[in-house]
Each structure stands twice: as structure tokens, then as C-alpha cells.
Length: 151
Image 1 (cartoon, rainbow, N blue to C red):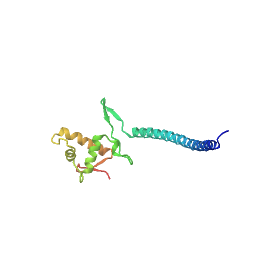
Image 2: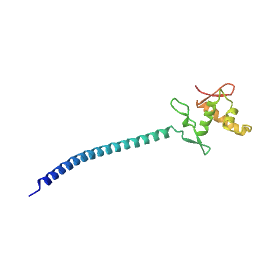
Image 3: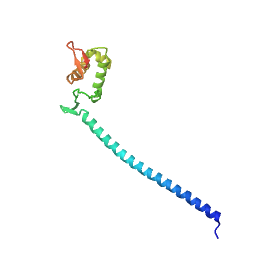
Image 4: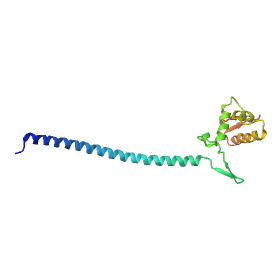
């Protein structure tokens, strides 16, 4: 004959294990659901990253060809377009003009950027870049030849 106390302990333990199995099954279902959500989120993030990369590539000016040499095209200033689309040297020029207390001559911009302003051959390319930024709407040239930022 079976010991009633032992049989009761086995039944109690079986009930504990059944309850634990139910809890673990519920947790497993929750884990699987969350993994599914993470997989979806990961796919959405990948798609968004690809889309942003495509948009950035479209916004970045493409180098053109002049005389067989690659040159960076300077985009026209438009609402919502940041100066980060400009090549780094043009960004520095724009920043120097912005930092000035008022309108500046090309020579003053050269001084701020550390260009050897005593040599005309060093100053003229800078003046050309200032004029290019003016032509594209990033800067404004005053009648006296000084440059200032656009409002």
C-alpha cells in the first residue's frame, strides 16, 4: 500500500510543477512576441536608414567635370538646405563671414582662415569662392565689395 503522506507530497509537487509550467509557457509566449516586435522594428530601422542614406546622397552635390578634373558643384541656397551640403572649405568660408562683426573684404576672410594674404595668387581663389557663394545665394556682396551673410 502507498504511503498517503508521500502520495500527498507527490500530488502537491505535481501541482507546483503544473503551475510553473503554465507560468513558463506564458513567459515563453511573451518572449516570442517581443522577439517578433524587435524583428519588425529592426526591419523598419534598416529601411529608414537606407531611405535617409538615399536622401542624403541626393542632397549632396555631385562632383562635376571641368577640363577632365573633378570639381564640386556648389548648390544654390534653398529653404531647408543646410550649409552642410557645401564642401568643407566653403563651410569654413561661410562660418568666417558669419563670425565677422559686419561685412568683410576677401582679405579679412583670408586672415580669419589663415590664408597668406600677401600673395595675390592665394587670395584670388578665395575671392572666387566668395563670389561663387554669392552667386548661389549663400552670401551677399555689397557695392563696396564687402561680403556679408544673407538674412
